[in-house]
Structures are given as C-alpha cells and as structure tokens.
Image (cartoon, rainbow, N blue to C red; front, top):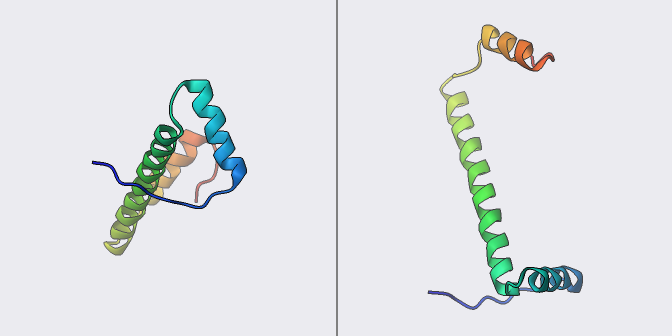
Length: 80
C-alpha cells in the first residue's frame, strides 16, 4: 500500500532529485522514498544506541580504567 504525501521543498533540492532520477533511470518518487528509508534507518539506529547507552549509564555500567587504557593503546590517543 502506498499513500500520497505532499511536502514543501526548495527548487534546488527537487531539481537535484530530478537530475539523479534521469541519470539513474529511476523515478523521482523512488529516489525520495529511498532517501527517506535510509534517513529513518540511520536515525532509528542512532536513537536505539543512545537509549542503550542511557540504560547502561543508569545501571552504573561504565568503562573501567583498564578498558579505557585498552582503547588508548588500540587507537593511540588518550580517550579518558
């Protein structure tokens, strides 16, 4: 099932979608839907990661000094 949605956007952005649609042989609607899916996927992942981190912090689950030192050694910078 699909629904019709109407949004306001600037002409330049819409023009870029039109050029991309022409170059890829896809419809502008397909590309806009793909962009929305990717945006929602990325934002949902970020929100889930933040919520998990907050739950860990609320539970007092913080990195130990040894874990921080291991990260420092792995990445070559002072993470603490």
